[in-house]
Image (tube, rainbow, N blue to C red):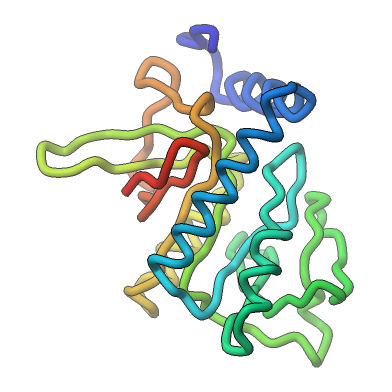
Length: 206
């Protein structure tokens, strides 16, 4: 990746999103996505959550729905959920089945209809969060992983709130190795929530 030092955060995001869009047309993409979904399958087997929040992919985000639908179909106890963006820029999560109708948010993201009486709100065991970019840091004792998102702060606010209610909640960043940023490109801020895990095609980082 080209050195982006000195460029604005907005430009950094634009460059990363443009590269992700071109990446899905690259010949290597299918193999990378296959490796990513294999890592996801291993992660789910190790962690054994009962409820997983995923995302409806936009802007060339990796589509994990086939893998997760297959995982959920293996047990009646397993549940999938999708986020709903509230006006206060927090997220709620509602149970999702493959044939459930979705509506577009103001940001163009397919999401559950929170006004539907049949919609069931949950706090999932695990939340999968797509990364625009990601970075790592070390505090002298352990590594920490951080997500660069779209800039709305929805996930950071939501994770800060939900982890107080459900301390066992696992937040998992989803991305590719090439999205890793160095300190000259981006450093996490005090309001950024750390990821419990980072999932890429080369493995699961904790």
